[in-house]
Image 1 (cartoon, helix red, strand yellow):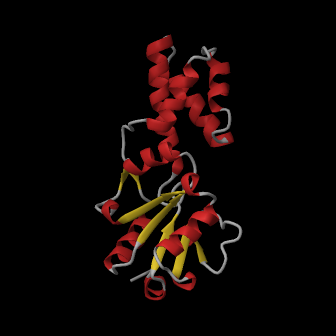
Image 2 (cartoon, helix red, strand yellow; image 1 turned 180 degrees about the vertical axis):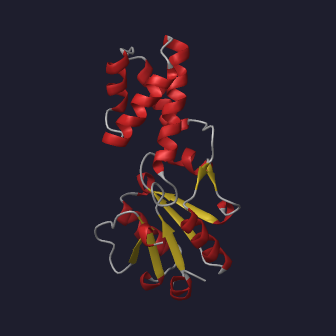
Amino acid sequence: MKYQEYINTKQAFIFGLDDVLYPVKDYQLQVYYLFAQFIEYGEQIDAQEVILFMNETYLAEGTVDIFAKTAAKFELPQKYVINFDLLQQKAKLPLKLLLFAPVLDFLKEVHAAGKPIFLLVEGDPVQQLNKIRQIEWNGLEKFLTVYFSAETGTFQQTLEMIITKHDLKRKEVLVIGKTLCDNVDKVEFLSVDQL
């Protein structure tokens, strides 16, 4: 088994969410698709043009001010920011979000070894829970314990709480994330890119 060294030496596995378990762009691009469809209906602007603009802007510049940029480009009324924000938080996506294949393999092996899997999720809890619900977990969802750092403090405080609450030893915990969080004291970190 590919990940046996970690599974043999660690007793608990703590994963981030965005760009760790799945590509966050898969969520964003579907939200933009839904928003463009809504705008086409409400303003009779071609959805394909809106989708193309939003996708290109997102891929080049990220999510910052994407509504404002889109509104300026297509002369959209400011009232649509409410719809955009609601879609960001609660969109029912046309397609399930798929886990990165190596991450899914790793999760399966951790579960098969009977070791606990935690998600330490940063960001807006409503939006993040919506994403979690729309991931294709392949049956693993019932074996996850989820913590939202927005409800419990910083990433570091939430990590400390998980370790304490579940009576874990630091050297037996592996955190899998996109970028190393500062002050992850005496807890091993693995970049998801290494999977």
